[in-house]
Image (cartoon, rainbow, N blue to C red):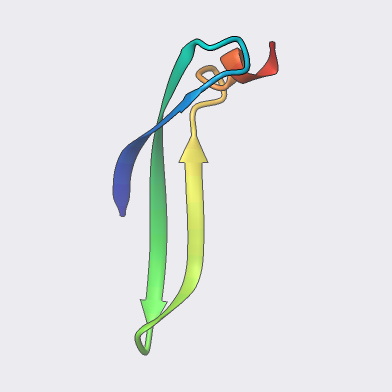
Length: 48
C-alpha cells in the first residue's frame, strides 16, 4: 500500500492536489493486482 498526493496544474493555471492510495498485490516478484483509490469529492475540481 502506498499513500501519496497527486499534484498538477490545471488549464487555467491553478494548482491541483488530490490525496490518493495505491494497493498492490505481488506474487513471484510480479505485480498481479494494482488498484488506485481517489476521493471523488476531490476530483470535482477537474471537471470544471
